Length: 86
Image (cartoon, rainbow, N blue to C red; front, side, top):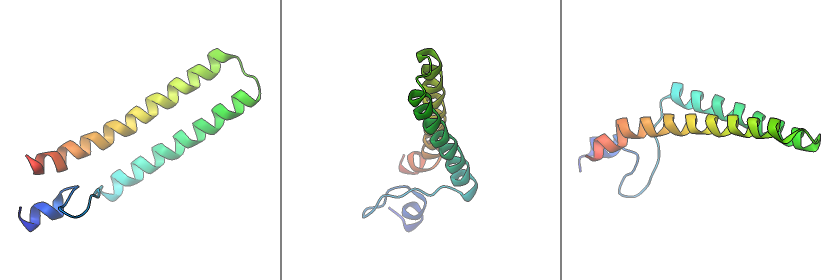
């Protein structure tokens, strides 16, 4: 394995790390901050004995948002690490 391949891939022989661009990393952090706020909101709904349908709708929104984060991570992983390894 060449040094260029090691430098560009998520996993080296001795360590595993990601290499997101600053823009991608900020996008992921912004999404996760919003999700964190949504989860706090759900906690508040439960504390206030909010109708279950409303809580379940918010939980569904958080799950969808987490799936969006996972898609971005997977897309980046496929475009860099997986292609480099193949």
